[in-house]
Length: 149
Image 1: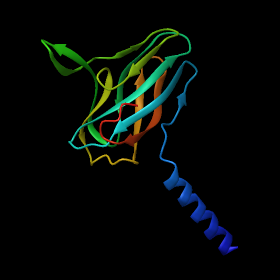
Image 2: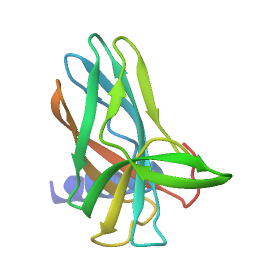
Image 3: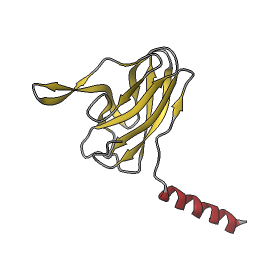
Image 4: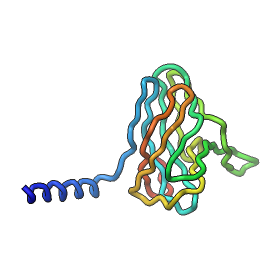
């Protein structure tokens, strides 16, 4: 019996190493969240990306929290006279029956003052906070620096 347990443990470890963490898909009655990820950090800040689809009425992402950062903010990029700059936004609208993509170079979850470095292969736990749908937990796999999806 101990040999079988050891064998199962060895197989589980091999499978974990062979298949990197994937974004947790999350659903509520009104929303589908998919494709989430973040990047390995080389600075004290990080950013999270994902797609939010509405299955009905409009909603708004108004905030998020994560145990891996001390100051979570919703951000976008703007072109300021030819210079791309990040700016905090109050909320991110999810149109009725539509979708919004949080992606590099656009809207994103800004994780300011990380509690530690984000290493490729790690997972960042995030709780998204919506006006209508409430709180939705997702896990964002950490990909290599510069990853675009």
